[in-house]
Image (cartoon, rainbow, N blue to C red; front, side, top):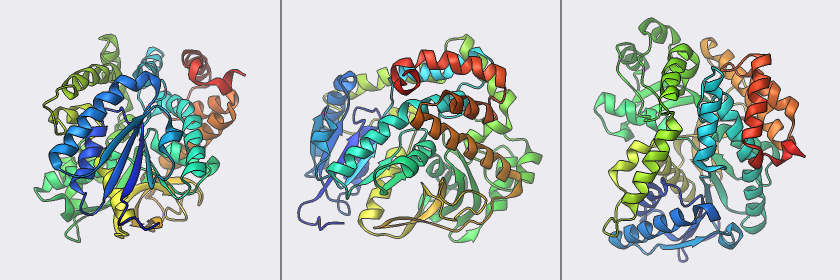
Length: 442
């Protein structure tokens, strides 16, 4: 990386009008002594212009209060922002929250799980998002080819898969708040500081398992599994119902599941809960939409100059903090261990060498170096392989605009797994999202 001591870092955040951005700004402020950010460019689209300016005003108040020399810029043209960037973070939502509402409500109408990143909803979020992310990556390769692209747009794993297969630069890393949420949850469970806890993570985005848990270097995995079996929680995710695990199941599983595994191991219970919410007109996307409106009213307050505590109710806690931690470790070549989405390179032997995985990695100035995890436990290996097949076919469908591959992916997914119903669901969702899927309607 070029010498930056005197000139400071330039960071570009695409999707800067996101409600999460104040946490990102807070993360840069907290780390300023180690991470000398001089310019933060917030980029959005015309539909997000009002939110972008609200966020930028709050960011400037936060920077002023902290008395750090970070300049905040805004633009609706990412090509204006990108030249000279050292890091580019992406946090976009193609189709805005209206598209997420459709992703959740349409599958539920047909009796399937309706979820933002899993099942049919997750597939359609990927279909809409992958072409846009690849265009952003193309601009990065042209205008700031030395920059690291840090993506925390969902579904992060499928986006990383697409960037690794079809992208224009190798300097791409996917990030998720689930692993750091599990680390935080374990630390809270133990009543200790986060930095005393380490978890060996391996799997896929929203399909990751904690294989081993360490406290001050001592393996305490069995203790944490016993805690989970007794009804205690080892995760902090606001947007998923925290139904207790069946004690005998969790002991037999032998590894720490993530909250999203409830959609696969508790499918009937999760579907029933979602159907009840659906009937009330309260699917998660509709709740989030209300929370967003409330948050932006809070953000408008000219006296507000900190990240408000209400942001934690939005879901996605620690996303931005995880991003700042990752950027800091790359910039300072810290060689600490963090879970990221990156190329497998043999870290998980039961998955393809070239595919995207979510795995604990040593973070260096040259990017993540995945730790060798070997083969996944037999109890979880098959499910992970099935989801990886679904992800890879979905990525091909998005890139090619292939109806047949989209249908195949939907049927492969265990939350759908019905050829006739899948075709009906696919046709309806394609029509609902037609505006954002031009490749499918040539």
